Structures are given as structure tokens and as C-alpha cells.
Image 1 (cartoon, rainbow, N blue to C red):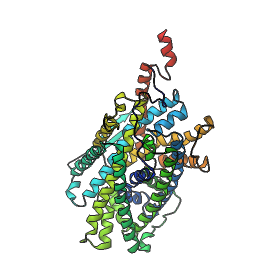
Image 2: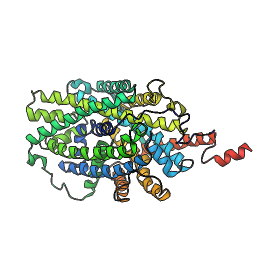
Image 3: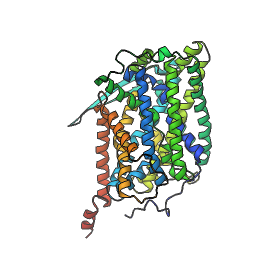
Image 4: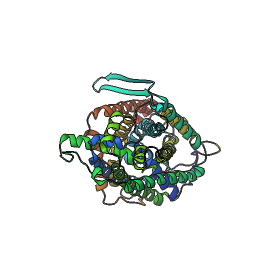
Length: 494
């Protein structure tokens, strides 16, 4: 069967280039911010056991900047829907190893993208529990275990409570809003961005005007002792920080819908990373100056009452004030904006692969009127709704580990491979200080993977997904006579 090339547009439905630099940057920023920094503060402080957890956010910003330069170079050189799918395929050979690696990327995204969307939806439901505490009443909770030969025991924990239904509702409502033309969505992203920026500005203002420096920098004894526990804690903190910063690459998944992509993709990436990095550091220090870190550790350890910013406002204005409820509503707005941006960006990736003949054919369908990949969108929303039954900490850990192993590492190394293989390839943007940022990003990802306690648990998830993906790809490639079975197909054809 003939597979159309990436450059072929004869039979491929065309998307609308309706997103300019402002909308692209807004989509990136609301994707990056989302509910992460408002609900993961207890988790990151718990990981390091004190306000030294700020190292996690600072190093996370450095990692985002280095990896962002990788995405900026690749996104400007190969603008188009699909992001990493397109890059990995081109880097490692469109009809050879790159076809396998790009398929495995899409396959893992079928799990990691819904995990990311579900985490935002679950975070929103956690803040809804500030108004209705009964939302956190557990109806059922189970842990399933499966022993795998050589790999060990694979565990999956799930919980059902009223908040779970709220999270599922968020997924479905977001899909409903995205079921329309991209130009309308670009305008809506700017409205959501205003709400996100207003919320952060208010939190920073309140924190700075009620700041207690002694409390914010009340480090426990041995906080900076370079022991095994310190590096375990730093690895856990950087894992959460990586989750909080991720989203700076969202614009790369919308390359076919970005105006002047060679210029606007790098600008949107770098502008959003610098802006969000500064906001995170100032905001989190402000919160630590109002809410004692040991209270955050208690919330993080119990995985409950994670609506820390609502508590922060009550401390600043009084428990009976209007500030706690108002900021809770604003953060729910922010969380929804993130889910909106994530679902929009990720829904274009399976579409790009399917249109290229390297994923399940139904995902290539485009809405006949509004011109968007509706099958991909609906499938993503459905799986995300199912993942809302997982706990927030498990969602984040599984998402980050799967994504690092099966996407970010091969891509950060791949930008160096592409420079070596294709030195004359047009590159509207070139990575600054090449290849240092790519090497720093790869090293940081490896540190996050292996420096944490119980790091093998999530790696087992990624391993199972990898093996299943290899099996599925192998069966499809054998049936269709594609790499690495082309010669076998020719022999059989004779």
C-alpha cells in the first residue's frame, strides 16, 4: 500500500492557519500554568521536606529552558501538526527506524496525554472540594496488582468519590467546547489567559504584602546536606516541577494552524517559558511566606486538602473572608483553561500520524464543516475521563516517567542526530549554545528517572506500554510490508 509523504497535500484535509503569536503564547502559558502550581506545592515540599523545595522549581525552570530550545529548533524547522511525531520520524528516518519511534511516540501519547488532561481535571475537582468537602468522601478504593515475569509487580490504584464525577464532567465539557472551528478557539484562549494571569497576579500581590521572610526560609536542620535523601528528594521535587512547567511545547502540536510558524513557534515557546518561570518562583516563595511549610507537608503526605491557595487566602484575609472562595473559583478557571489547551493540542497528534498512514486510520477523520480532527478529540476525552479514577500523585508520576522515557530523551538526543545527519536542512531558528542545552536536558531527565525512591514503579508502566507498542507496530508492519519487513514482503510477492 502506498503511503503518502508528509509533504503531500493532495488527499490530506487542510487545517486553518488561524493562530497568531499572541494566541500561541496564551495557549502555551495556560497549558503550562493550569492547576499544577496551585495544587502540587504540598507534593513538592513533601518531597524535599522543607522550603528548600524551591530548588526543584528553579532547576525545573532551567530544564524547561534547555528543553524548550530543543523544541524551538525542531518546531521552526518542521512546522506541522503532530509535534514530536513529525520530528522523531524525520530524525531517525521516515521509512526506517523513525517510523517505529514515531509510532511508539503516538502510542505512549495515547496514555500520557489523557493522564495529563485527567490530572488537570482532578486538580479542578480538588479545589471544588473547598466549597463542598463531601466531594472528597471516598466511595471505593482499590489497588490492583499484577506480577510480570522479569519486570516485577505492576500496581494500579484507583479511587471513586464525588470529586471523580466532577473531573469526568470537566473532560466531557471541554470536548464539547473544542468541537468547533480553530479561529473561534484562538479567541477563547485569550479570554482564558486573562483569567489565569489575573489569578497569579493577585496571589503574588497578597503573598508579598503578607510576607514573613523568617517563615518562608525556615529551613530544617540538614536541609542542604548532600546526602542520599537530599538527592532522592530533589529527584521527586524535579519530577513534580517538570509536570508544572510542561506545556511550553504545546504550540508545536498545532504547527499546521500557526501563522508564520518559523518565527512564531520559537517566540511563543521562549516567551512562555521565561514568563511562567518568573511567575512560579515569585508566587511559590510568596505562599511559603504565609502558609508554614510543615502544614503543606501534612497535606502532601495525606493527598487531601490540596487546595493550598484557598488556605493561603484565608490566612491572609481571615477564615471568614471572601478571598478563599473567590480564589478557589479563579483557580478552577485556571485548571479548566489548562485542560482546554491540553486537549486541543494533543488531539492533533494522533490525527497527524493517522493522516500519514502510521496510526489507526479513523483518527485521520476531519469534521466536514468545522475542519478539525473530531475522532481524535473524542477518543482523547473518553480515555482522559477514565483516568480520572486515579489519584493525583499517581497521575503525575506515571505521566512524567512515561513521557520522559518514550519521548523527551529520544528527542533531546535526536536534535543532535539531526544536526549531524542533515546539516544543510533549513532551520529558521537555531538552538543557542548548541549542543549544551540538549545535553543538559537529557541529563536532567535521566536524573529525574533514577534518583527517586521507588522509581521502578512508574518505569514498569512505561516498559509495559513500550512492549505492547512494539508488538502492535510489528504486527501492522508485517501485515503491510513496512520497515523492517519490506524485504520479506518483496520475497513473498515473488
